[in-house]
Length: 189
Image 1 (cartoon, rainbow, N blue to C red):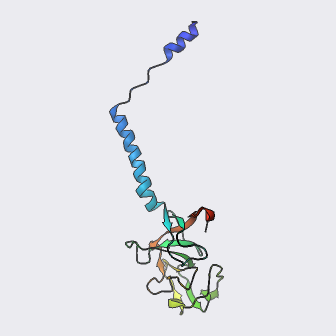
Image 2: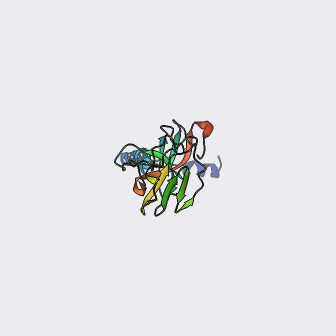
Image 3: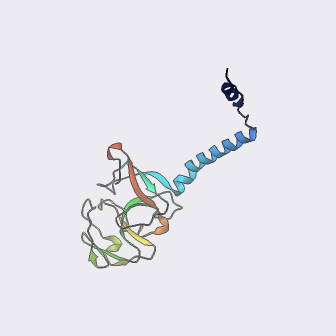
């Protein structure tokens, strides 16, 4: 053995034994991360939701799974959103498309949607509207209200219905950003 080999052997140290406290801290960190992933992230960042019903056909179908972005979302016209029609304290939520923005006046005449007295393009409708509902007359939206419609107008319970009406921003849970199931339709809706 030469001098270099002797130095290498003597420089190797025994691994330090960890204290019980370090194990407890490590386990506490893992538990905290797991709890954040289970409870905080779905509540505040992104959540999975499942479409129930036909009101958004042909864009979304019954049983499809979606990811909803919840953090730092500013609603825009034609976004698909998840909202609580009766307030966040309720378990029931709807998936619809935004048409009317805060401060705008919306009116539906026949199958035409007017925003501030101008007809807008309605490229998402599956079929004609049989009922204009509360938007038969001009409806001025508040500074925190949105007018939403389902794409399948004949079966959709949306802002035309007086039970739903305009949706307050505080009741919008988030924006649909991704369809994750079925895999054959994976992508943005």
